[in-house]
Length: 478
Image 1 (tube, helix red, strand yellow):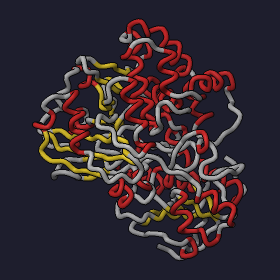
Image 2 (cartoon, one colour):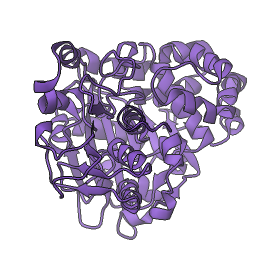
Image 3 (tube, helix red, strand yellow):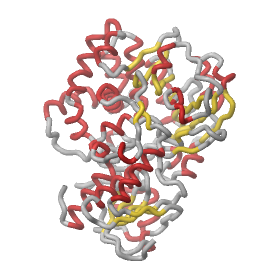
Image 4 (cartoon, helix red, strand yellow):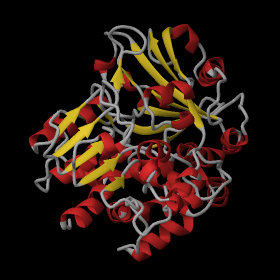
């Protein structure tokens, strides 16, 4: 690592850090990315967690926003090794009667399987899917007047509600309500709290517009492609380089942090003014996750055959069951029948496991910093919808909230989303400023999932932070 000559230094090599680096390097700037871990990628990493030859995604697994993100669309990921795999259906949601609600790529095909809710489903999703590209351009960033105001208004009237409220008012059947609840569960908010419906809509729209794909070989392939592209632009990435104080960094005109407020205070708190520090200290983190990875002897034996068509499965039963489950973590409680997100990547990507074998990936939400072992509870939910599942397990690997934070400092208390994303922290994360990516230090910026638009593998937080730095520090507008 050179000690001088950098225009910008990025701390953190997650998708947002690499997005910031690429955005700056495209403008001819000399960029350095520093990563504390040996393996770059943050939430987009893949490792042999159970047995040799079984590849498991350490955190992110399925990537609807990987194709919907305006930033990712601008990067030649395929030229640098990303091969997207699209399962026949984006996701499935099994129920106790042995059937499953399925989100198909087609709005009409999805609606047709929802019986008397078919027309209601079309009315809710079809106009938003038709305008998806404009909608994502408006919403995946800081608050601003939408360029498509009528479309934005249509989205907002539904999105700025609770998922429970929207599902209950729009749909009559348990299947349609459960399908939407499962998607909205990705918000990591209680589903009777606003605006949990927004995440359900955004991800549902993505499922119809671009699908819920997975990268062949694992999420690490996305990281590898971003780094490969960055290097063609002259960027440099150094791993095993933990930054504890920004004063230790080589001279640079701009410093961009792909970290949450907690680490930002540790690195730069001694140079930040008291008012801004107080805002960062008040920043709220949300529920943690408990995750299991399995090496399996065969495909998961789902009761509902439709589940074999999707890489993503939402377990949790009915809308009301999921409401109870997702309310528990915010109250510091453990639910004995939790909402579980499951991915079965190897069913569609044979590179993930030895021939004839499979992998499984699943997590549930738990209270922030929880120390409860959820292994048996998660596997009981698996058995509920896939009897005989335990007989398929060859090996398992568990990740508690503490494990997550130890292996990725951004996951405070197991919060993989960079902080609660409710109304108080939706557009003002991490602090109230005209541009949330700027700080009172003119050379310092933040572009992690603790900034708009929040969690997910989309790179948009880093992209917007880099835009702010380009404008303010280098006089470049893009």
